[in-house]
Length: 227
Ligand code: IPE
Ligand code: IPE
Ligand code: MG
Image 1: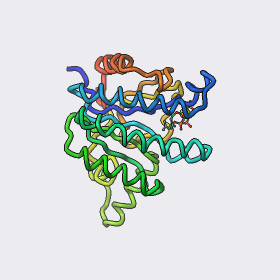
Image 2: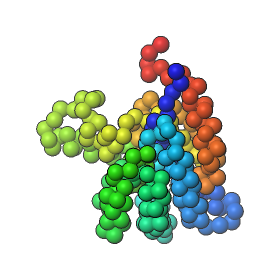
Image 3: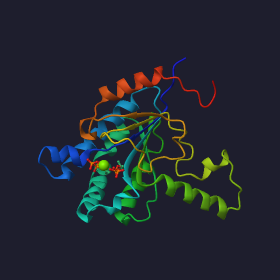
Image 4: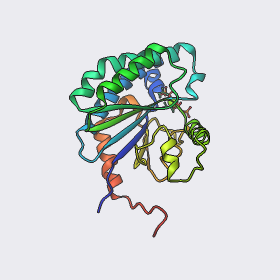
């Protein structure tokens, strides 16, 4: 029996380099990248086996970037959520987030909550945006939640305290943009994910390339430590 790609997670990297190569400002790459998010999400919503798509959009380390780029990304996110609500509804996609939203503006937090609320009954796919997300931060916040409730954590109950509780482990983890590292993404959930690294910059990533990754994933032998 072949593997089922229930949960796909993507490190959407390479936007800045994609734009620079064309002599454009880095933010152009983010803009084009947002369009790719729509295409990939629509593809996943219409794929029977994919239930969760987690996309790394802003890391806990990305605050180190110039203020102008950070501000652009925040505005882009707001615009994306506003414009794409119709896509979420049409494609029956539920919108969720992981990460610590507390540093975001009230207006952006309100937008995020609104889209979550409006899409909460959609069943074809859950699209999870990782926003101000860090794998270590998620684990530390989870540990503190458990501590506060006086619960001794186990590998099974720890799930309940994570931002990503109920999302299930990652089956396929893709990084575009050519770098071969996790950059603090999903440290807990990706323990047994199958890894795929592609040199394609995120704005050039296509559903066709995703299809070929899924095809290769299905042929891989996942042993989970067994034989
Ligand atoms: C990824 O693309 C998007 C975010 C981190 C928001 P980059 O902006 O990191 O693009 P490169 O890696 O500099 O090309
Ligand atoms: C990872 O990309 C974060 C996102 C894609 C949101 P980065 O571009 O921030 O990662 P590094 O700095 O190359 O490791
Ligand atoms: Mg990068």
